[in-house]
Length: 155
Ligand code: 4NP
Image (cartoon, rainbow, N blue to C red; front, side, top):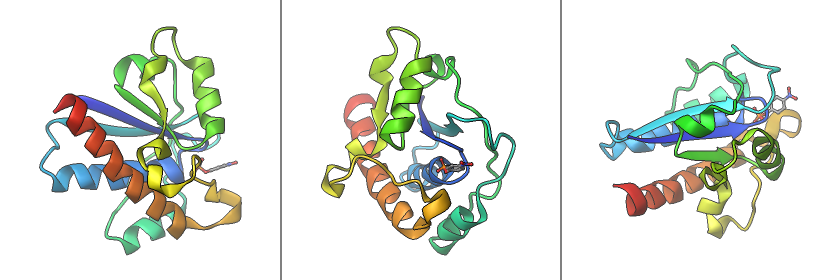
C-alpha cells in the first residue's frame, strides 16, 4: 500500500479538498487497494471540524463529497506512517520540516511540484481570500501528476 498524506494549515480547506480529489481519482483508476489517502493540518485550530462549507461546495460542484472528513493535526509519526507527505504551500513545508524525524525528509514535497505546468509552488490559502474554485483546479491538476509519479515509482 502506498500511503499519501496531504497537509495544509487548518485541514479544513485545501488538504481535505486534495484528499477528496485524489481519493476519487484513485477509485476511478481502480487503485483503492493500492493507495491510501489522508489529510492533516499543521495547526490545531480546527481539529474535529468538517471541511469549510465553501470547500465542500466547490468539491460538490465537481461531484466530490468531502463532508464526512474531520480535521486533525499532523504529527511526527505521520512521517513514519506515510510514503508521501505533501505540503500545500511553502509555509506548511517549513512547519512540517520542524516536526519531521531525521532521515524522513525525502518523503516531504510541495504538492504543486507534481504540477509543473501550473507555474506556482503554493496552493493559495483560500480561507480569508476566497478563490475556492481556482484552488480546486490546481489541486485536480497536481493530483494527476502525483498519481503518475506513484505509478512510475511504486506500481
Ligand atoms: P486550509 O485553510 O489551511 O486550507 O485549511 C485555512 C483554514 C483555517 C485557517 C487558515 C487557513 N485559520 O486561520 O483558521
